[in-house]
Length: 243
Length: 243
Image (cartoon, rainbow over all chains, first blue to last red; front, top):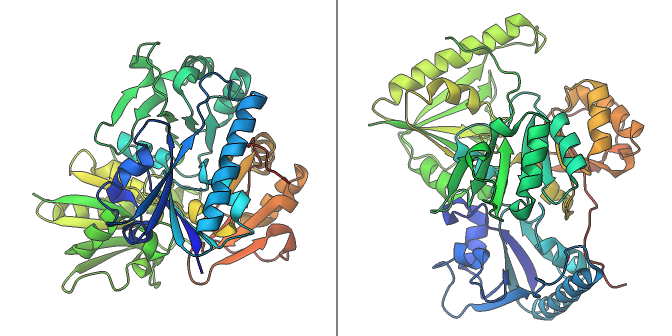
């Protein structure tokens, strides 16, 4: 009878969600979303004013992990328990109800929902509604195409070792670097090593009202916003332009 | 007074376009779109039933180029003239009118609109509405996340030399290969060389009613659909699952 719909919310501007995601959210009687403990949550904020009266909300609050390194066994175990518990709760609810899980960006592109999805997909019917990625919101905000012709685009996590970043940055035409924050000095060094720092942009909260755009080279070293994306645009093959 | 709005249509299912793109298209009095000569055109097909009565349509038909190699000077010159001419026509129209240009997928991600955009952006106000990419429609159709944790995603054009494909495929976790068609035998050889053929999917018309999904290794060698995308899913870091 019941099922789960994971609605991709897009890059942040509510107007950029798909018609299908919008319809699912506006009609939902049960809505679940991830957030940090004590925060309103970005996913929930995007749907402000869209939920119908009487809709039940399930805030899935990440375990507090500030004391733990992201790759420590304790952190991994805490996250694993967290996903197990919520998968179990949603499985019970989705026996009889339709539950809409909100997911920023595109659910199958580095989304947290995937951890629930792999736990539930063989037990419960699940529909995933794709969304506009955060990176697409960011490159659209720069007013420049990210890729042309045969450009190679590589998407990297700033958490990768510096050598990997440098090697990948040298081999690609267009670049997206996510998970920046305290990795930004390392990302900056890698871009400098391959001669691409001057072509790099940093975009925070792309498509949102408080969007911030800057050339990375113009920002002070200490400025390390966590939810920012670094972009280098491709300059590939294109038919010649007059003048 | 006038301006151009480029509306990203998403991967093909009209229900996956954004609220903003939908509103622009439904309210448009002038709509332009690319298509091959003699074809209805995929962009136009996506908005079937959405255009209001009296809306004027501008079919921008690519010059016929079957006789020319894509990198020949004649082909490049013909395309260049084509973009110049349409840029000039739209510039005149957009002096006084709002013109909505339809664009499959995401306009700034390998989209044809970019060639008009660079010609017009300093002359006419242009708003670009991002869209869900075709590749996102395809990976969502496979029912598997494309990237986890710190996975490196690389997007390649099948038109690249085989050595480049092989080197890039060896260095990335998750892969997207566009522009397949007659390049598919080469793509297949490159995937085989790096031991990833068995993990590769071929998706045609992702999210559309006649969507086709297959493991690349299961398809006969001669099967080379042009508008197909090849995907290899990343298998990156994730919290352990029970059982």
